[in-house]
Image (cartoon, rainbow, N blue to C red; front, side, top):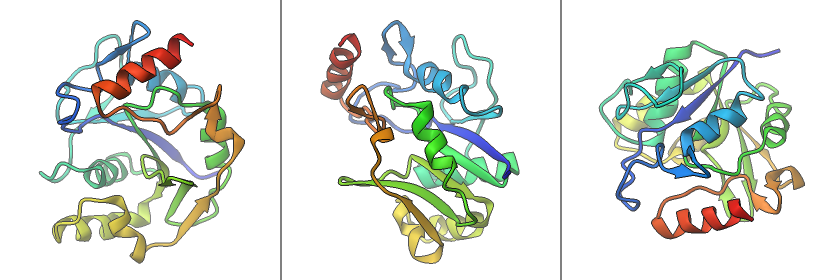
Length: 195
């Protein structure tokens, strides 16, 4: 079985939210702790990638810094790959309140040697709920060096296994890929969570 480490990305600028998303409290729990709680059901080794935190309240978890001074999801992904030395890193965003262990396991079951294993829905690819092989490192660094910031900028250079839409991508009728970028989205998530 491949060695897979989970990396929670928590270094985004949160410009649309206006505050740190990782520590936003939903159901009396910071978002990142909620994400970590679900990830722990699946992974033995979990790290956080963030330049903004040295410690996270109530969490004992290694926090690593970006390896290059460019803030983007690509930087978080390559930092996790370099730091962990794992065969694969399963990347999660810190602002996904409706994650499901079953969906993560489903994606893990699709590992078969590709560089990237990524779910795709009718809204497109979900790069912040996907698996990246160590083979991605040099390509990611090259793309970042050329000014690329989007995960899809590395797709042309790598082998990709797409995990198609599945009922497992929904938890109580809500997409597990739901993330929170604005105050309105946060309020909507609170409403769903209270259910």
